[in-house]
Image (cartoon, rainbow, N blue to C red; front, top):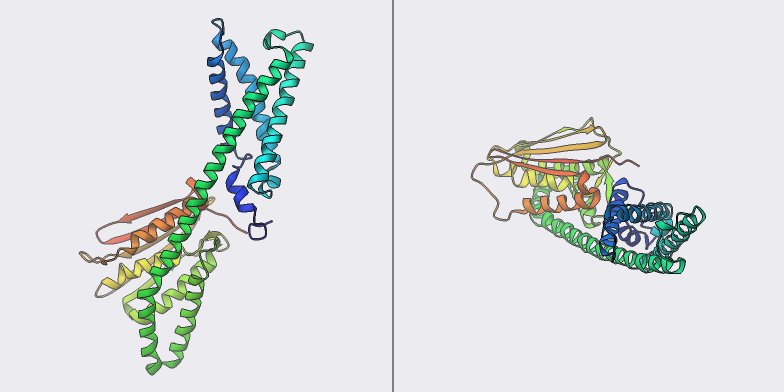
Length: 351
């Protein structure tokens, strides 16, 4: 079920981490061991056997942590579809029940095999302590996940607002220039003017439709090609765009509105400021499980736009890539004296 058909999906997914991931398992084990150390240090009397007490506590807590991770992994889809409140209640009840079951099993095993010295507390006291400590730890963990969810939600909203601002930035100068170009073409080449109007309509429709989520590289490059055709009418031979993207998997996904704003920046902040124009080079390739795309343009020495929308676009794209891929993607910029290059590297995801 997709996020579009399930209103709870996005919230639940942001609320709960992927317990099936190796990174999450590592964090769970690390936190479990820290809890074991704290509990051992807090004991009234370890009788000089700190390491022995720590090993017993660690063994017990690690079993709880690992089993809890497995349960949450198995319930992942169900919890994602449940919504934040239900996901919290279900997770708390499941984890608390699992803790008590493990505690009861541990106490019974030590009694059956005559190793009662491993657990020094009476049966009821041991279960009560397990219930109290696990309740506090689970509640704190859920609270942390909730706060983290709200923080991520605010980041998403900020990213969306940046996209909207970027779209508003695209339209003014480009729209006025395009309309002037079309107006002149209506007298000299009406058919070309009609094609330009259709291209402008397609481009504005894509921008006005909102940031969306992700789109295929094929659709993203088609949108950039439309923008190139419109600008070519205005700049003529001053604008050359060379595409070297044959090696790219065109079905791979990329965050929507990535290539076209970068091409616009390359033209507006680079080629357009050069008296003789210049060439924008767009290259791409697949490198293992990653997609790499580079956009490079010449720079006019000593010339710079009064409004630096280039930095805003780069900040926006970097933030959206971080939200989409985390630390698996990179957005690098080479701002040299005579050239400006943006390099994108992100995991290949295909439908």
